[in-house]
Amino acid sequence: MGIGLLFPGQASQFPGMGKELHDAYPAARRTFEEASEALSRDVAALCFRGTEEELRRTENTQPAIFTVSVAAFRVIAAETGVRPVCAAGHSLGEYSALVAAGVLPLRDAVRVLRSRGIYMQEAVPVGEGAMAAILGLAPKLVEEACRKGAALGVVSPANYNGGGQIVISGAAKAVAAACEAAKAAGAKRALPLPVSAPFHCALMGPAAERLTPELRAIPQGPFAFPVVANVTAAVYGSGDAVAEVLIRQITAPVRWEESVAAMRAAGATSFLEVGPGKVLSGLVRRIDREAPSSAFCAPADLVAVRAFLA
View 1: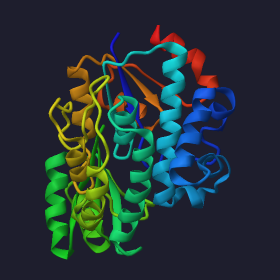
View 2 (view 1 turned 120 degrees about the horizontal axis):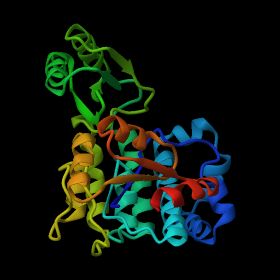
View 3 (view 1 turned 180 degrees about the horizontal axis):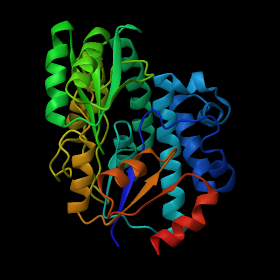
View 4 (view 1 turned 30 degrees about the horizontal axis):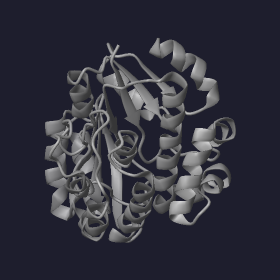
């Protein structure tokens, strides 16, 4: 059985996440300590005692989910010896996948993610951007709805999540117009999302510019296992500059459905979501019903995951 690892992105956070891992496993505690030292902030306190409002602030969300995800990976690797055939992460989860694969150092990645969150939030004034999930409409028709909405500003697909779900992002008025166009074209639903900024669209250009020098300064190591990139929906090549791909990722859509197909092509027959929540394993079930999935983020999950891996 070829295992593909999945690392979650924003909106998977919840108060208390990672506490049971931290309390039960030295590998998890060391991960939280390493992230806290890098940020000069108690990341464990943020994850365990932070309020929902604190965890929703994107400069907190991104390093928090990342730290829990890497801690969960280190625990599951130590406890089961799992050897993935490949990995992918949704948006910020790609950083988790790259650290798990040994490509990026944890300390550098968590610092960049804090900056990434700050720069993304500051790129667009609160209230001027929006995101919405379009359900039950073909990609070409969603793209056409965005072209109609673009008469009022920037709007484009941000996440091709699969299972009939595409998230769009852009200026608030343009997103609202695109939602109406999508419903007129036959979408089952068009749901505004409770986000603090319009991620993965051209409005994030200033964030990409600000983050570029920080990303280019991170040392890049060899891949312990292949990682599929959001931007290309393909495995990183041996000569790829990871920083350049991650710079593009800030403004480009997450091609998640294609990424899952690329993982299948790379040998993944089953998927293990590592980190808070079960959003990605749920998406995999909608994308490919033939591919079993499981999730790990707490000691109580270990028995089921051992059976799954066996």
